[in-house]
Image 1 (tube, rainbow over the protein chains, first blue to last red):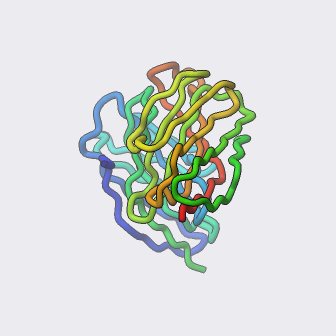
Image 2: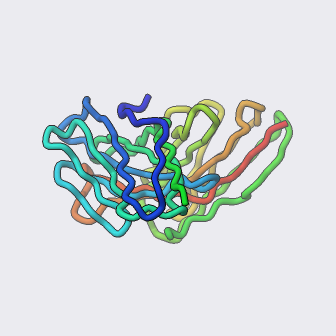
Amino acid sequence: DAKTTQPPSMDCAEGRAANLPCNHSTISGNEYVYWYRQIHSQGPQYIIHGLKNNETNEMASLIITEDRKSSTLILPHATLRDTAVYYCIQLQGGSEKLVFGKGTKLTVNP
Amino acid sequence: DAGITQSPRHKVTETGTPVTLRCHQTENHRYMYWYRQDPGHGLRLIHYSYGVKDTDKGEVSDGYSVSRSKTEDFLLTLESATSSQTSVYFCAISDFVSGGGLAGPRKQFFGPGTRLTVL
């Protein structure tokens, strides 16, 4: 079973920032937080991962709280193509076994 | 996009027949995975491989076998397909993140999927 909890759905206006929360209160010191998304019918797409520090790449930013029990994925300027299911996953370093929960269905509205 | 292809993309077969799905990568990544995705269950790991001829079971391995004779190919076989194996199958690949090593993070890259229907 997935160890993280996410809201089942969120809406965002096009051009605005989308902030997707994730709770991972059981995370241990060597577990990373990963974010993936799945656009309808396609294979999941890696977005970003982090351990302790905040991270940013060309797709998104990841903000991890100091106690590491929760994080927020930020899409700074959401577009209609960002409509997807977003998965937050905690996973031990070196482990292969991603466990996908139900994720958050993000709908970006025009 | 990572160079991952899956074949066939769609297949309809009958109960009791053998089925083999192929995943091919051009990235020379060490790790390869097979997942299935069903409504209400999300993605579940079937089997994975951590090198040529090295494989291990995932969460839902019963009824499936895999083989990896070359780095670039990972085959998933249903020896005798059942209706409960109707699903969308995704292949994925990964390797060490630069500087991460064995205990470091991985990024998995997924193929386009194969839709299998067992009648």
